[in-house]
Image (cartoon, rainbow over all chains, first blue to last red; front, side, top):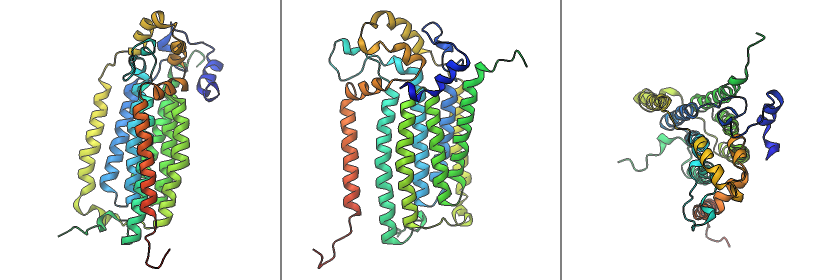
Length: 150
Length: 199
């Protein structure tokens, strides 16, 4: 895992300080970490942008791409909460009692993995639907689908 | 200039850079009219999100994000664009109901308002308290030996694997079944219909 961690490599190169349990608040890679509120603010703006795109865009693939932006905003929020609250989930559900009860579980990141799975399935099904609709109706504009209009 | 220390602001610099990058590319996805450009903007936005994951100590998720989205979904989207090949109509057709104005005021205004409300919340620093409490009591357990590593550095992949295989095993299997059903469904759905006379 150290090979991926170029931020902390840079931290040790530039500041030269090791992170211990005593300076927890200051040891996220150069100084005090960015508060989780900043990430939540950014994720809310991204979610709003994606929802705006879903409402206003007319091309089906554009709507799917805006949905991807919304999913990404939610994933970002989950990861931010996982950094803030990761250790508070010391008691995982669905396991028998014992020593394994106190294991560290980064719940937010695990949920992000599930969310990625669902996003991949959604993209595959959505794009297959788009292609099928294009083959049968000859258009990909959402306003042209008025088969059920009275 | 000599005594100015940039070190406390470096996380903010990383966050601002990658956050603004992600935001500008998402704006490009939403507002640009050409759909191939939209896909490229979406790829860049997902790349910025992966960088934000890395700044949140989630390196593994950043790598997974790059592999899955940039390697899989963007390719799917580009293939679909090239297979369907229809450009979006002009704005005079889309905006006939003043739809974008109402969408802007409702959705984007609401989300910006909620986001500003997030700034007022004082989250308790749960990680620090729990680390101080639990490090003494549970440090003999093997899976918690990596606690300083978890807090300071990245979340180890072993913790994610433990979580997937021990407490959330049922959801993991259900997600895999959902993925399998989706794949089989797509294959059945996209199979060309059988014409009479075909074998």
